[in-house]
Image 1 (tube, rainbow, N blue to C red):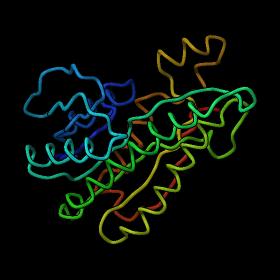
Image 2: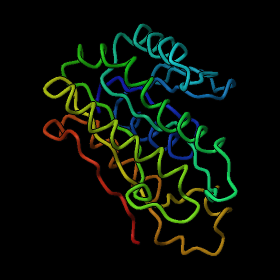
Image 3: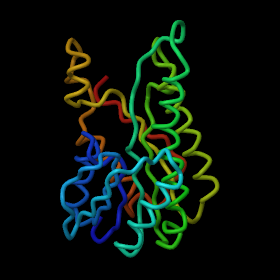
Image 4: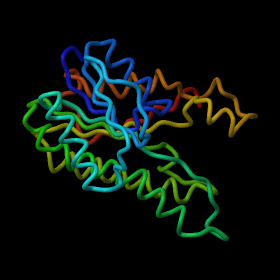
Length: 226
């Protein structure tokens, strides 16, 4: 990671914060893009870009361009921005489906499209997306979320094919991540079986590293101890 310029979307979330901290500890310079308008002050190793709706292509273009200009390029893009929603199909509405599509798929699509020219120039460009094991076979109430994450899987494969030899594109597929929000929403679950944010961050940064130069189009399960 030493000297790598990495853009992390959804950087203020539970996973995003761990990825940013771990990457900086290993020598990377980070552009942290987030929907939250108020962000901490930037430092020499962390450029904060807040108030960005990545589901809007124009805003994604502007944020990525700003990161590339201020940091003199981009070596890796880690698409963490996203959300989860549980809703049964019977009795539900299209709103949840549209929201999941916008927050999980379009954020990754728009950021990736905007970053491609910079990643190609890097000569060691990396894109790492966040899919979901739950998208491999959707359970009850998982339709909107699983459909959007399945689309992220297909985006990953298509981009990997289009950019082969230029930029590697992979996705990690976590099971339930051990975060305060998930513990609050599922208080009776066995937290010890969940994948930790640190464990998932390790897998993400491996795929963003030089060591993963021969890996592209992979959908890597990170299932904890389920």
